[in-house]
Length: 133
Image (cartoon, rainbow, N blue to C red; front, side):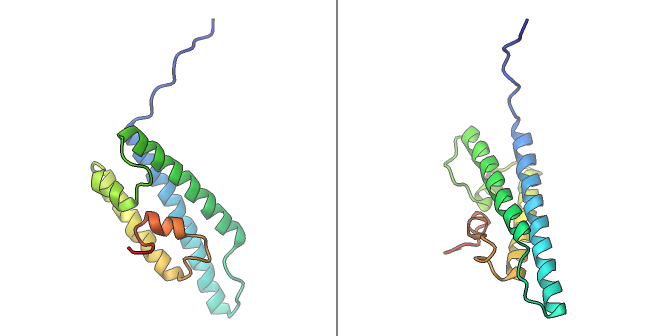
């Protein structure tokens, strides 16, 4: 006999954990892009960012955005929440973890120095580092 039970709901803690994991993956990709730029400068090449890393970063951006939208939908919050908004409403330890990711990623975006080239406008806006931030 086939059971038609609903799968268990994803807990709020699991949603925050997934968002932190997605931010960690984005952060890792940003570090990879920054390292590539340093290597280009050292070797005096101008190859630019690795296209596959930029594509993976764009995909990770979409995945993270979907996870955030899922969280805000279950919380009844408005769509399009930024990282500072999540930090303000997240329970501990998630607020601290999200804030730490945001600080590290903003620093990496500054280090990379080509926000638009790596298609990070949406990430910049999410981090509160976009236009008007």
